[in-house]
Image 1 (cartoon, rainbow, N blue to C red):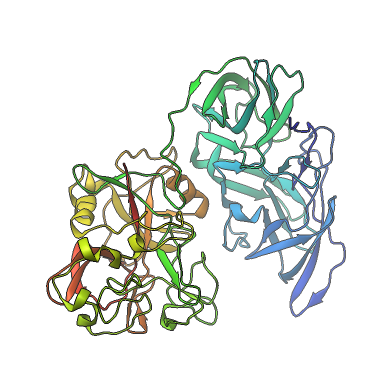
Image 2: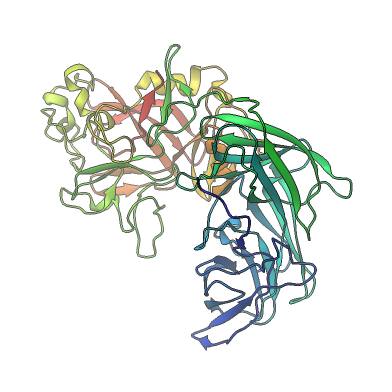
Length: 566
């Protein structure tokens, strides 16, 4: 039985950054870091001093920097662009890739994760990433924690072991995660750091990934200690919160507790499991690459979308889904603009060929690689002659019956989507139309927006509940941007978990020329149109949306596969 130690090391608590040796080379400086034990910053955890870890990521002005340190109170931050002042936030991902150097406002928008992933250090103790802020006019930065911790002590008085999958804390009144304003106020090197929720969620979870899920022993008198980061709540009187333990079998136990979380001290609660309160309704069967939301595409059929657009590598003959919903290949310029993660850097649809070692994601119609009798059936086909894409040379043949294998996702094994044939498919013309125009409340379940600046179309599932503290503006704005709905990566993770789907504006390809990347999105259907064309769904930055249009089969367009809900 695996025991979880009750002691821990904190991966960046309230802390101090002091110069340990400044050097200036080509306009850069080296900053040093020491943990602050000051009264306004220290959060006491089992009497252990909080520590920096090697490779902790810190946002300093407009840079994401990495610490260099052994486990302890001192670290260095190298190659920081020299400035008259430095503002810094740890961890870097709560502010994203933005410039935080401006002192015209004392607050910085941050996102406290709705789900905090359990991590351990080299000793097997929990490593907690407590947000901190710093402001300095020299190379000596003093970090202060922005929020405290909830300490949860678990014990088991039942007659059987259970494996812990997650712990969730919920408040009826206070925000516990999501959008917050981090305040870094006062004079440089003498500031006070706080975090105030602005538009956030009323719950926060500690999630135990596979491989790090603790076994809580039956009848065990030992205790198991875990920590969750949250903003202040409860004040002097405290408030009622609900804490729920979930096992890997879906059973759960709930506890009503009175708690108060203050800036300079932890809230501690003890939970003893004596019986389960219920069983979670099973989620849909877990399938590699499948998103959770269910979408009606006819009066009798629902589907679930893949995690990202379909991609292909000719040199290895490999098909995969993009790692994230917002990823697309587009075109790769020398400075990396136009390419959004998820695949190997340097991938470019303009380099499409039978030997290209990068990834592509814009395909001619019916180009699955199966020999359909068309002149062009390979995913690297670039002919601009529409008749080259006729299945068996006949314009009236569609991707059904004897020609079903011409469909990209149906014919091919997707490496990160189950890696087997005939698991996925492409929506038909009528299904796209039903999804966007006919299903219940269709007009209120799609809109334009952006994820971390990447524009595209957002589609909501049939049974949609907007996460607490979030907004979603329906319709299509006529403005020439994607700001109708804007989400950070952390915010989108919450929307995605609630079932939302995002189709990025991946542009289109004509021969080896790629156009309208980042401003237009065009997604193939599996339905042909007699004559030169085939049907696709399209949207543009100016607000244009069509459930279905048709054009030459020789255009390279994006493909977003789905799976039927059985």
